[in-house]
Amino acid sequence: MQTPKKVLFKSPIAILLITVALVLTFQATALLSQYVSHQASIHSALDKVERRISLDSAFLDVGNETLSTPVNQFAIYRYLNRLNTSLKEEGYPILVSNIQGIFLSPEQLSDYPVVVTSTLSNAEQTITVEMRSKAAESFFAFSWIALIAALAVAPFFAVTNQRRLRKKVIEEILPPTPKLIINLQDKTISNGVDDKVVTLQNKPLCFYTALVKYCIAHPNESLPPHKDVPSELMALANKCFGRLIELGHTKRKRPDFNANLDKTLSEIRAALDEVFCSFNDEKENYYPPRAQGEGSRSKQHSYALPHITIEDIEIIGN
Image (tube, rainbow, N blue to C red; front, side):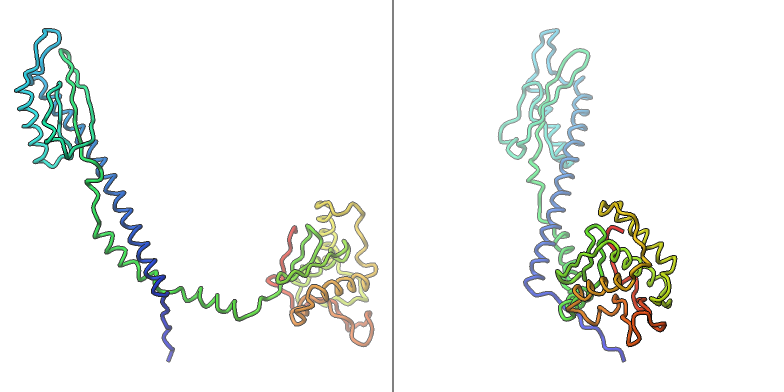
């Protein structure tokens, strides 16, 4: 029977902080929505009221500048009260405070601090209208929906990511794994774990880079030192040397990678001994084997790297 996975939770303080953050975020979103909705309703109401007054202006005795007739204050004041009563009954967030200089009393305007002035014109007269709206703050309210949503979402953040936690624990328990890093830009090799970095000369650097690539592509092929270097391996080494020329490291002609092969392999082994001095077991994947007993030219010997894979290396500046 499979053992059920244990659910792990964050600390109480972390859960509390997450919950508070979610509540604040959801409430801020709700307040922003309320503000946007308020502004939209204000603009819509202003347009409708202006249209209403414009239609009623033909029946309003607002005076006439051309005929020098005065404003009928009583008629305008009565119209203001009737219009504002209608606006309140229909739930509009504004009222009309002034038409042609006829004002409502200050007591009637106390809840409407924001002033918007508009001018309506027709063929005979110009009408000045002042409207007032409620402040945006008056529409802000605590959102219970936002609170409920935050509390509903919070448990999902309270559970610890077990995969991430397991990975972190494994990384803390297991030592880091070295990896061969060949850097053509500064002509070095390193292990990617500590600060051991060794600079190689052009010939061993190019030959080793080519050897690594060749052995990954041909994992079961033997490379006896008494035979000439395979043409494909030579081509890879020459290509790497061309890359060093492009990077500005050398202007010399390409070396003969068949010549002094023992010396080249010896320089490579010495560099690897230094780079992987703390990782002897891992070094074997990258280390061209030495001849055992019969000398470096033994027909049984091979300097190939049979166990190296593409995951074991990183080539910079390739």
